[in-house]
Length: 302
Image (tube, rainbow, N blue to C red; front, top):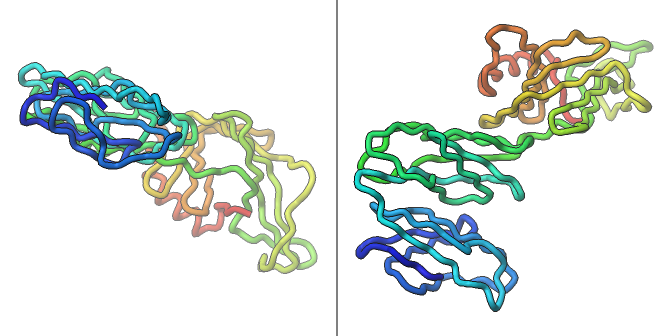
């Protein structure tokens, strides 16, 4: 790769594919300590900027070939009393683009590693990094995202992303209900997604040969009736909780705001009719989910 504009005594830390850190301390054509076979994919990014400078990468991504062009790293001096804002991001699923934003600056990211917003900020300026958008099925959490720019570059923002826990498939309720002839019955949900924000829930059931609902059980076959839909408006993940807010609608159910929450192997439906919402974020559903699991009203994968 070719490095230009790096000030004397300064160094820039680069990464390939979010790993394999290598430090460059001089201009010119440089080689990384690690090597990769032809046909490997590469994505060179800046992990740590030099003090008082901002480096950008051109021709930094592609597939290694015999005639691969040199990766270009260009560093420029920052105006006085201005510093960069950045950090690290991890957990981006393959093929997903996460857009971060701060102060009107948007930064699309598609790979783990270091990131830096393009425009430096004046010393004393406040910043607030948030996730502007992620595809349905992916959630991200920002830590150390707010503060005030001091006399050095900010590189402590941490963004963690993950695939939101799936809710598709057949689920059976924890609660066992008595059935005719001494059998046991459990309610069931067969869930599918017909489009990114539209969740179909078909009502079904599982029958057991005893009133304790022990053993294998038999899943209801044929068309499922009496179900409902949830039109999703937003989603969030926090530690081990995946939460989907939306509006439930169905022939046998009143239309109302709900939160569909998956925690571990439990899936719970919480009514959310209060104004303002009783569940403003995923973490706020924890107590209600604990109570619902204890009451046996949540569902587990079948």
